[in-house]
Image (cartoon, rainbow, N blue to C red; front, side):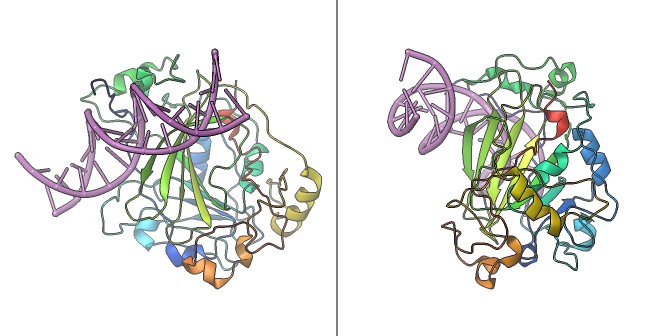
Length: 323
DNA sequence: CGTTTTTGACCGGCGC
DNA sequence: GCGCCGGTCAAAAACG
């Protein structure tokens, strides 16, 4: 009707990156970044200091994969199978705009923790436009006070092009779409994705002052893969997330995946026996290829500590939790 | 009763 | 210029 506010002019709608189909099968835990950014840059923007050395979270050789989808054509996978997905490689269809940084994580949790280990960041990163000031419209919930972002205001101007703000995408193998990350989110929309049978869900932080948004979708190629994209930084503390099972899980994951020199550690994963998902590495070909939807948990159960409800744990980028 | 989810429609950008 | 698509809003419904 009348007032529909248009999308924020502030950010470009670029959801171009996508997981490489089969390549994703190997995805266990790794990090991926679009060619546009370098991991450090991206992370920095979010206030995350993740070591980009060669060791990543996973035990694989290269936890971090700096991919250049565009040029290489992507999906990259490390020898160990760490890997990754490509980002926006021009699929030919349409969206081939920009890439977003992507991180692949194993089951839900890992990356969260990893990131969590680096708490030093101020949310004052440079531009975190309050995402969209457009929100002014305020939907029902949060829109109340959006960060003053002057820039945002300006950027929002119609004539101006939105500044593309860095986004951080995580690829997780989980049956749960919405992984817990310590913050409360309110779903404000869902849309069918063109090349995927799975819809994409849009979430916004419930904190009235926080404009952080999150996009969650499943890979069309591999239903068991969930792609979570964060935008913006939280301007408040997290509500807290479950930390039970921390020890055991941590240990379990740590061994196999955490490199000794890595700063990452696998934190607390919560175990939800019934909800659990599968470990990527152990996915049967059937699923990997796209076998069937991941319908029920337990399918493959897992040899690894499975985390049931998607728990990202402290995934929240430090910068986002500054409050 | 308050909050969150669902769902259809609208807006803007981009490609053709 | 037109059509497609992603992203968001907002009213109603559902849920705790």
